Length: 215
Image 1: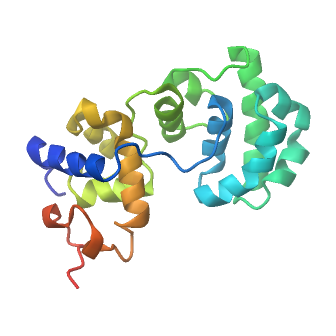
Image 2 (image 1 turned 90 degrees about the horizontal axis):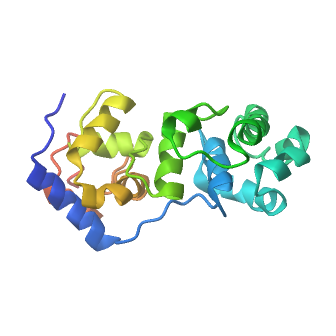
Image 3 (image 1 turned 45 degrees about the vertical axis):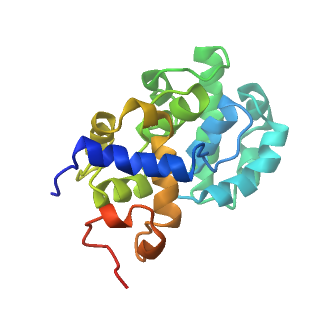
């Protein structure tokens, strides 16, 4: 496995990200912590654009667990049927709404452990909610973050947890809040899986990945 970079090089990478995009935003649309939680649950194995298309009407009708529960599983299913795994996801959205009401007074909890106790919510989803809704420094590792962290040697790792823990150690706190957005956006639009666009990459001169394209 590749060696992690020196702290000064990692700082340089994030300085460049910050200069290029000082306030990066997640691309999932939401109106509050609850709708963000639902959107992230729905986004597993789906694109943000596809989720947004399905949730605009859904969130206009139901932006609280109580309203979501009142809609019922069938109606939720109807709204999200363009998203992959929609039947199971509709079940989870109703189940997590029930649990939020029963266990958390209808509020989205603010700890990873409590979030992970909700149906359909894993570590990555919990990290996204903690970061975006509550401003915590967390590193949600999806396929883009995993790829960029390895290619740029910010936090080389063989699995998602290794990379997440590596990012926690490697990224200076001043960049922590926005780090996972920079990495996702970089992976989604520049450092793509099959055809990375190295010619327009702001990190190109620092990158020594075997996947680097020089032509």
